[in-house]
Image (tube, rainbow, N blue to C red; front, side, top):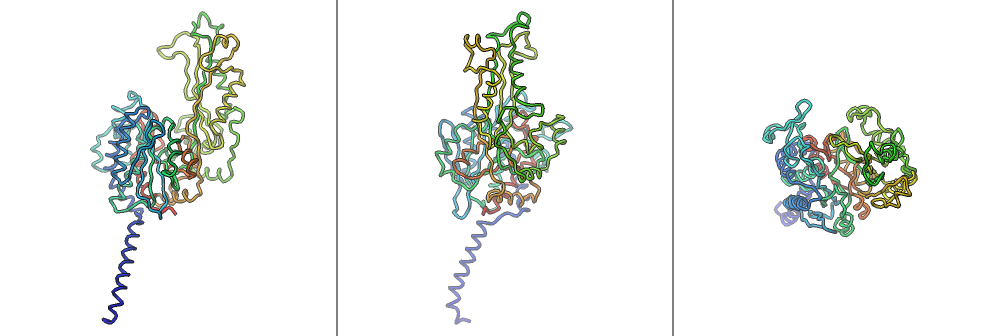
Length: 515
């Protein structure tokens, strides 16, 4: 045997090199098992929730530069401490934070979109000291009672909730992704995909400068898919992937009466009241079943049998939904809630004329105002819908003015109004059956088996169109927060069970290779 030693040594060297190479490959692409994901996410939960508390304590009104800077600094440190290189991107005055990790040419690249800002707050309407002092609460009867954060030292009840502005929309989803990265690092694993991040600090203002940032940095944002860490789950609260979002356009309709408010006793039965005129105008926009009567409003929308069948697979009971929301009869734009979301909507989001309550006065108001929002789908672009709405008002006999009517306008036109509008996020929709969609569904199945749902679109808006149009890649939202999270409202919250499942979702996706 000794005579073979000169041949065996090179073979041993080659053999051990191969073994070392295989071990390195195994380490690089190793994935956590389902049991490991559950175990490690529960192990990290308490630490994550305490970091989340710190994150929620930073006010995040996107209209305030000081709030933007404070959150930007926190997020910059959070990403850099996890091994990502960051840079600020601007097209105007608003910063956007971009981050990227090491790029492995053998892996697909995912761009992760994170919303950081939240809606403005009225602290007096919250059932706690401040929306920016996160409160841990447990349900007691019909109310939520605050408990000490020290309760996290013991067993953590998944039914507890954390109440704070942006707990669900969308600092919660952001924190679950960061926590998943912490677990991967702690367990010696690396993500199965290359990761890039874009952090948006003015999503609630319709991301006014994001489109320019994307168009100016196409190569930087280049990716194989966009993962949106934003959005509320379906009413079933099942883990949820959503493949599209409606866009939004808003309008202000102001109907004019006399040039000043008038005494209702002296001028009642003589001076026209613009509230009645506006009421008739609004009533003419919808029929009794809730369908919009503006000509052409739904043009271009066609649902295939496959589309309808996919929507039927989403678990919804209309009677249960109506009972939970508290009304007797739903509108008939679609046969189901999912179908209704495939069409554009027309909503009166606010009305104003004179005074009410303790300040009510016996006056004929000089003007009445309606604030409108329209949710858009891919087939109904904002410019078209705005033009249809404007034409409808004119066809009802109104003369439209810019600003206030002149004396000549008041003398010549019995029906006077102004019409202003604003276009926000554009609608988008990605294919459910695609390589990106298949990877996401495989990741969800890996951790939840078949206990998750795919929805074609969400009723809310997300600023994904600039990415999709500029980069030509699909975008899909991972929905984490509970449907009863009071999004945008006082007492916004996230259920700890949802938060935990969010961590597990992110871990599963980063454990499954994107082929």
